[in-house]
Length: 184
Image 1 (cartoon, one colour):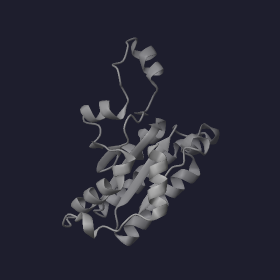
Image 2 (cartoon, one colour):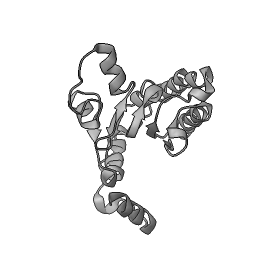
Image 3 (tube, one colour):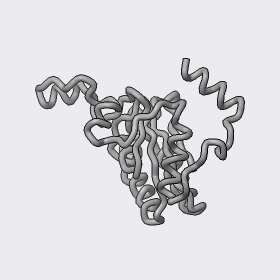
């Protein structure tokens, strides 16, 4: 089961609908006995919804717990950017965390942290490669390689034999052209 956030809509902010969608995806994964792969892209919680938005953090955490209790893998692909309450909740609760190269992943912005601690942060702080080097991520994978990476990791977590390249379904012509355009 796959779920994704659309950063083009209000910066991917987490509101009630996002919380409901993630809960529905987790319930569907449990019902089908399938892993959940979530693609996060968010500026944080949707402040326009106030406390209702913030309530999505514990609600989605409970949904992730349902997956864990069912013994199902939960894989999170952190895209650029994944920030705020999304990072503080379901985006960092995966069994495996994969990020796209140079993705910004954080709870609070660099300026806020620097003003709070009154120190300059290291170069690349809060970027995918820095987080990988410091144990917060399992992989940094370019989108063009994401499909194969997810197949490999999912099969490993499900204790299935490795997929053989020739046995994998071929991407459709539409998928190939979309990936080619993204790579530009």
